[in-house]
Length: 243
Length: 218
Image (cartoon, rainbow over all chains, first blue to last red; front, side):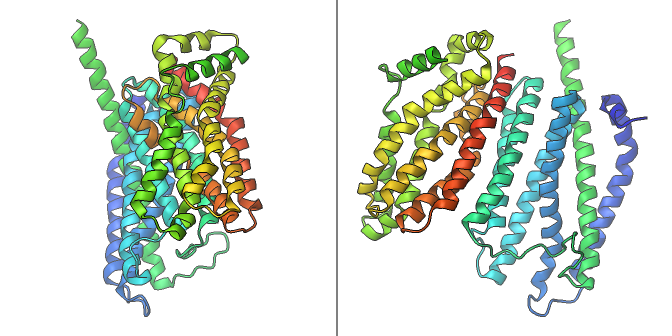
């Protein structure tokens, strides 16, 4: 029993069929609970009013936008080292989910920034690095779409993902150097354990974050399954065309 | 290696090789910016370092798709790949040739264009140094982009989408050096960061470029 047995597409599909219903139910329940609780059953902040509630969309989506890239990086490394097709397809499947998360984070941030900072957009380090991350996602997806041969596409996008990760980190520091921030620091520093979010807001936020994480997992499982089936269909069609 | 470098340089300088196109493009970009923002001298002098960097970036990008595509089409890339010279070295040499034909001329003419943009006198040395330190990174990163898109038909647009985000750190530090230099401030921190990026990229990027090129030649 090892993790690598799920590199076999059949085993992977089997696993995802067993896991997916639970994942869907759990993630939707968590997202719904977190959002409904956050939107309707928390008090308004005394300075920010009800705009504070956008945190329940903004923070989880931003979290998953970054983690999606990490997951792609990991999957790309596994593909480059061990050549498991499922891994490459999982990276491919995660990219559109990640880009949607990035867009949600950017848009909700702009909506919140307009009343609070008085501007939709500021060239702040965090905002700018998210925009750069968005561009990386676009480039990654465009490269997948541009190459016909699936194996070379997987190879090229994997290397691009590796190089892109290094440059994303570099850009993050460069942008920090370039402009001082308007965006507040993290509200929930894991290491120190002191958080600046009050308990009433914190519990639904954590639920929403867990929900977004599970939703991401469910979507990636689902989309990877679709990619595997798509490739099988292509192989079948090619075989039929030959005979 | 030397033979390869000389061959690439000769091809670039020969008629139709496109040498000088980058320079003309650089000049046009600078001119268009002046048209677009108007002729106020103090405004131009404030944005001059940024404009020069953007121009250098775009001029570099313009010549990237011919960097490997022509050799890919006529098969000389396959010969290079099977030659005893490692592909990493071959790509480094190609990046060097690209820098000599596009980056270096830009560095040389940048002060002249700075005059057009009313760059403050103390800025001339720093924009030249910033470009001199930064443009090799542009060529090497660009070689990676060219190696990724070499097998794709009409890959030019994709190439810019892939390469431009990778240029962000170089651009930030390069423009910062030029800006601080023009205002007479201390430039050592951004200059060191810029040099760090250039050297890091020089050391690591050829391996990534060679890896993707091998995939594309498969």
